[in-house]
Amino acid sequence: MTSAKLRQAATIENVDYRTARGLDRSLFQNLGTCQWIRDANHLVIVGPTGTGKSWLACALGNKACRAGFSVLYKRASRLFADLAQARGEGRLARLITALERVNLLILDDWGPEPLTADQRRDLLEIVDDRYDKGSLLITSQVPVSQWHDVIADPTLGDAILDRIIHNAHRIELKGDSLRRQAGEKKKP
Image 1 (cartoon, one colour):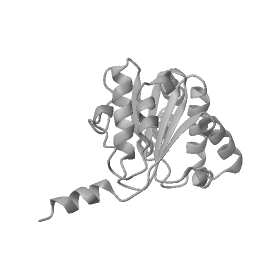
Image 2 (cartoon, rainbow, N blue to C red; image 1 turned 90 degrees about the horizontal axis):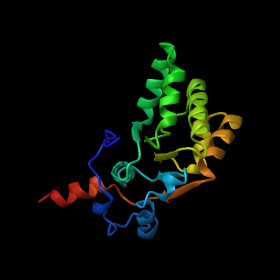
Image 3 (cartoon, rainbow, N blue to C red; image 1 turned 30 degrees about the vertical axis):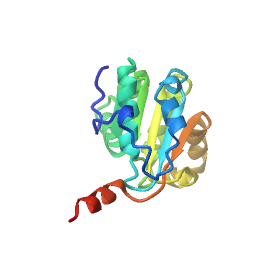
């Protein structure tokens, strides 16, 4: 797959390490080698709005495509809508199988609202299918310590997070919105 329909035309070569947001240059450059995808590890990028989570995810997705990996980028809300529609049309198993085949699944903007029962079960299926077989990149404004609250079921939360977090690299961004900073620089 040469194109993943990424949200942004970002590349790892254009990452700004000068902005104070807590991005570890060494870790990010290591992630840029795509070894974590070869090893079927995951990556979690968390931080406040505007710190560049989606941009960094797209840059890594772009690099993965250039390295020959299949990549699928989905905003979490759209993925769950697609899963609900597939369930209603009787093709949920086929969609879950298609997601399993992708080397890197980017799940952008996960966690702004608690999951429904169907969403919890679907997410468990997705992460279970990817365990030791494919990589997952999740971006979220919600700190990992609060993900159980988003999943909203202690048992399924443990099962889902155990499959994501234990072999995941983490980038925890901080700071002000880069969009806001850019807007302030443009003001006369």
